Amino acid sequence: MNILLCSVLTTLLVAGGERLPFPDQPDIYLERFQKPDRPTRVFFLAPHENEQVVNDYLAKKVLKEGGCFLILRQRGQRHLFLKVGDAEYEVDPNRIFTPVGAESSLRRENPGLKEQPALLAQAVARAVAVGDFIKSHMNDLRRGSIIIAVHNNTDGFDDDGKGGVGTVSMVRYQKKLDTGAGYILKLHHGTHDEDDLFFITKKRDFKKLRRLGYNLVLQHPRVAVDPDEDDGSLSVLSEKRGLRYLNIEAQRREGCDHLDVQQKMVDQVFRLVRP
Image (tube, rainbow, N blue to C red; front, side):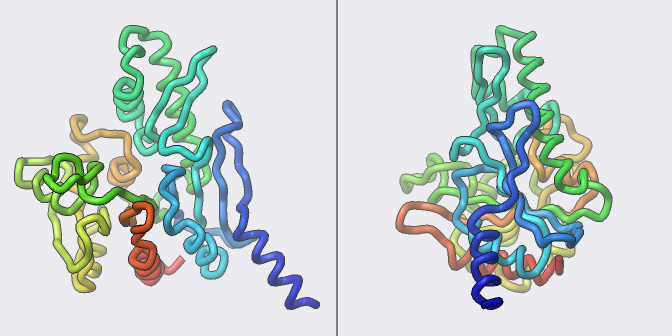
């Protein structure tokens, strides 16, 4: 009886985490998976709701081994839709962690806002407030926090000559570095598919993961001080705060998700950070 009850409770916890609504717009919310009464400094975040290849696996692992896993939710799409007055404005949720990044994303996704400075300012304030809300459930990114983003990308990249889509790929990062991209310090081309990679901020993680054959992108520390490199992403904010950050990237495509690879990447991160 007790074993059955325990099994049912575990299933319920994995099926749905705790819902944490954003107070100013409750249709935006975080789903949190964390062991009850177990504080942590290790936070996993899935900011794009449609990138969910490894989410179930990670939720179960966090409930078993520790850490906190947050999934940002609204409509099941990549972007958030912010309500400002009677209008809605689209924003990339991985660009809302600094005011500069939030404004840039809002301008890019909503061209008409450029001509409406008052509405733009309100939309930026709403976007930054969502970012602050997320941070409030990640120990406010205090010193010692470890931040791990979870993302999925598409096969290849735009204009790769092979019909690829998107902007994330080791091949594309190499092209960016070769042409002077300021946000990349170093790359390591491992043994995995070009779309399966770690994007990280600390050299010690780069060295450890390089020995294991992973594709790696080491962010340049200059992004913490160079305003031209402030894209509002969690990696940039982590650099500004001096925090240890890892992004676990793997390919998603119908019938061709790299779930097994991303599961192993998650396992390796757990060995690195020991939640």
